[in-house]
Image (cartoon, rainbow, N blue to C red; front, side, top):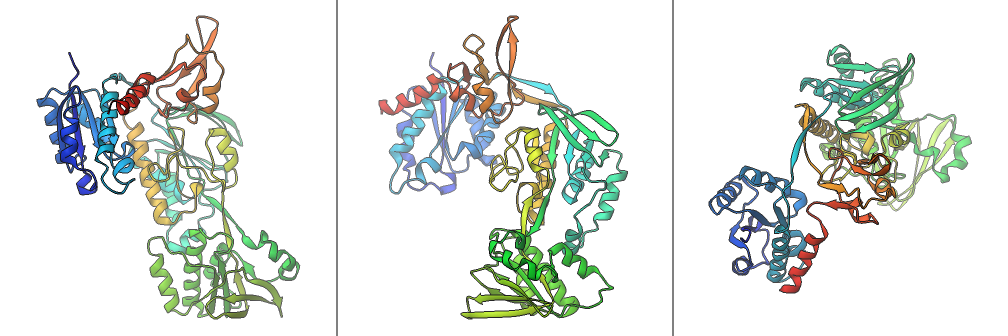
Length: 550
């Protein structure tokens, strides 16, 4: 008896305009095994999902094809629809007729859309149901870091009922939060006090990770303290180690010749300038202040925000003449455009220069020389204080953490997101998350979003004490495996290990819990010993044959 296949097409609320859906419906309805074809404009919305469930039940549909947008965005939604309709959620195949068809071409693309649907129909016939099982997980969380991000995270995790260990390499919590307090008026002291008295939070200071093993739900972490080493188990690990900065003057080749001359002058960092602003006993208030940014790193939110905040604060407190030398002012963060305009209105002068200014000494003051783009002539300024540009860098120890956890870093050394758009706080290893400055140059709004996202994901992952996993979606055949270790080397998730079978032979074993079903191991295995359910050879060949039939 032929399998009953239901095909659901969606025009994405009218966003797909160059496909003749009426003609497509008629052609798809003639495909063998297709019992019904439905056209919708809101398939992923509540009303569309209800219609889809109703149709599956009424028509006794056994397998489903959805022709709409990218599976990367919506496949998980339609899998849940199948479950609610009483079907195994792996009996679904999607045809991306939006990004891979409509939005890729000009003119009518109806024929290509029909081809993609035909390929999905051929594939769905061969899909097999996937068995699932609940596995136990450890409900405790390890948060690495001791600043604002880490402290805020452990407090929120505690509020949702998860026990947390806060691991800080320094002797005290809250180091390096002075700028945050200055910029936003946060009382980080009270937040840290709340962490220290919370019974759901264990604080380990002067401590570092020395060894990490295991997988999501069951990480084994060895921690070194002054009193020795301890071994702990955690269900998830959150990195909130922040960042560090250094003066760009220290690394600019064109300024090194002037180092000896300017070494004794009042050239300070943003953090040092924050301390000056907070010092009520300052002997002499600076009359003229210069700022520099955007020459060494043109994508830094931190230096832009710090400059605008500190320049405005100095103008209001001391009434100083303030000049900002920059290449561009990028204000993409929330509230920064308003802050920039307020600084301009208060009298802060912005001077645009394509090349970094030349810094020298003159009569004990800092002399800044630059060519202003708009004036078209050189500008020379003698100032009492120069707040130099800073480089935004990964925190000390990031390389060691990357090695211990087997997670990647980007070209600048920050921890690399699994997907900057879809999974910005996730790593390639399930159960390990990033927050704030350890993953890049983020403003406060983005940091707070990171914290909320991670807390929600960790709670969803661990709160019940168990995880529902797919059994053997990716499996190595012990009869074909020759233990060449290729899969272990390429797996970014650390999900594969060698195990001994039949008393002597070692073969690859893939952890259902740690596996992210990326398919890399199945694609690269030289012995073709790894099977990836949903992407077996016969399923892929069926899609290719669909094109030849048309």
